[in-house]
Length: 151
Image (cartoon, rainbow, N blue to C red; front, top):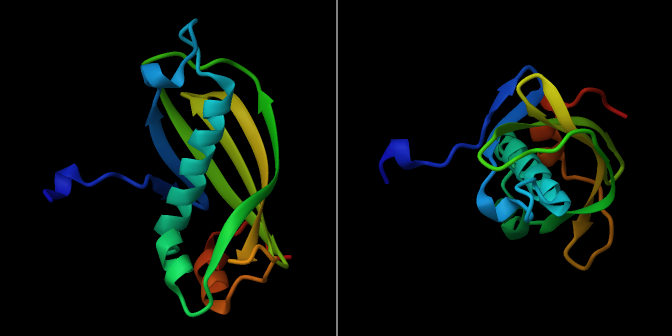
């Protein structure tokens, strides 16, 4: 694959991960505005690509010595302004803290300097049988430098 054809996982600015996204026709409703459920998709991409740049891949978590995954246990959304077809947005993600098996994450979607949507997310690290588990030391080491605080 040509390096210029490689998808981007965004970038870090300080501890904040930034992932540019464009609004496509498929993201919108009949009015040309982003359908509310699609903000969840943008936020998911932001969390996943943030982890990827931290050195944590979902496939690696599943294939490791101690297979694990993440599930979202809580999410609070605040919609402030609509996004429209063809706009360029940025998903901003901050991993705030690790508390036992929980990861506390703050996210926003912006258009320029305007905040369009905010999300407070709690993701839980789980065994593949669905039981909560604490992140492995390796996972904590990879996420640790990007945390706003340790708990």
